[in-house]
Image 1 (spheres, helix red, strand yellow):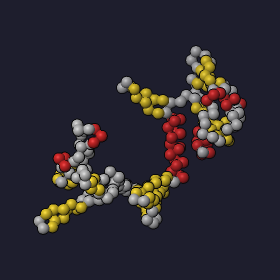
Image 2: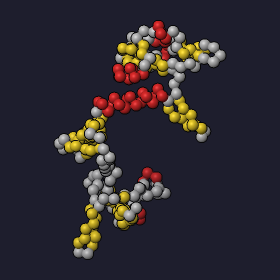
Image 3: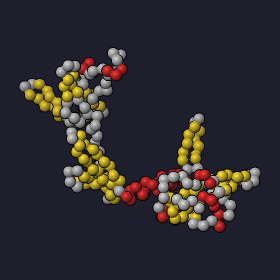
Image 4: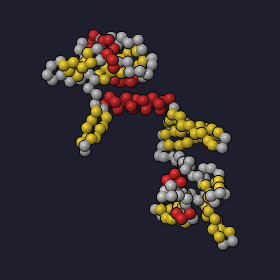
Length: 231
């Protein structure tokens, strides 16, 4: 082993000469990735140095290959950031708060010699994330191609509550030329009659892509905030 300095912080690494080559790549294979340990304890006994550090599984020695397998890849540390705190609720459950607002919990389940860790967002956090996704779709996405910055903004948008996760509107809709500078969306009336639809449907159109006679459509919402609040 050798100690190295990284930004004035000591790290512990195995010398490359002691690492076994990757067998899957044959004799010309590269050496396996080094194990870098940032948290360790150095002890001395009889004038010799010893290093103590945590690993993700009990080290395994293979007599035939004279190799020692040390696994540290599963070690992950979840640290608290500004406004964030972790509150323990027993050995297997932790609640996560950000600025005093509960955003979810972490559940740890022991499975034989391994652990299963689940990160579960709270219902309020799920709603907020869904809202953010819908807002991004409505207001536009950023796309870059050939060094040009472009936006993908929907000129027409239809969204609603449905009984099944299926794009029920698409088969009915078509774009027709209204005049030389504008187009219209046809088939909206037929789309609104689909039996999978629940409650009202949100529709957004623009001057370039219009919905004819939209004031005569039934069970339609044109206000985005009203639609979001229903979700």
